[in-house]
Length: 369
Image (cartoon, helix red, strand yellow):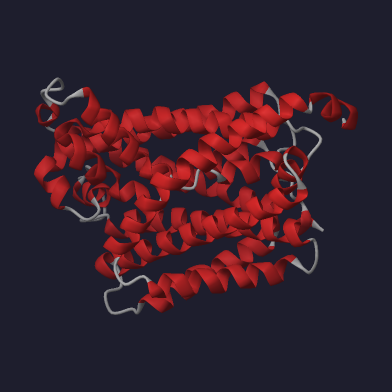
């Protein structure tokens, strides 16, 4: 069936990367970066982009070495052992589930603050998870096709808004550049990498590529370069247009920036509804990606039962955790903690171990091909 097609193209992965990382974390990024380096926040974002690019390179390269394997579960079991592979899959599933709940909690707070102040959180969460269920149920390929369309709906209008934001910017707010120490920029760069939380989803998605190789890797990393440039420009505009003090006092400076940009000849006095529509689409893709990755890992780990049953379990867990988190600040703190302690393991250590294991088992891999 079409819903069982788990092969995707490089272009679809590129769309997933861009829409995933333009979600709720990006709305907070300028404030997180400004807390460490003030008006030089864009330098911290640039450092975080370099770190994320290195992590993405390791993740993509490590799983591409196992060309005879079609899933992360098979790769882990082959590289280490069946027991270690299954444990790693369960841990990664818990990681994706918790991330989805935290992102959904932050999104619920944004909806309450800007769109539906009287709507309970559980209703917002239930509706988003209901939509995510159908997207996850119909497989990775179907979801990727949707993101391939949605990325244009999100990115093109966003670039137009950013372009007009340049005319309202006071770039003197970015000066002087040399006032911040290198150590502060590095620390701020690592903390700003919070926007790239969830990067290990590449370990699950990339093995499903219909065509691998160096060209596919370059195109995937190219999408990271585009995304990084966009986030750097957004951070610069937030500080230039709003001022560093306003950025530090704003809950979601990226959204505030888009709200205050004036489009000449626009038929909307304020484009709040349009901006929030972009956010809803990116959050939908984010929750769907995380749910789908967890479902795939669980199904491969236990090798029994239907995919929809694992999807039910994950969505119930996401919904429960979302409601247990009391405030948005608590969700952000949890996500920052998860980012600090899991990134070195899932984004750097695990891919390096997979690369080393592939070198040792290269003859067996070639034989299986």
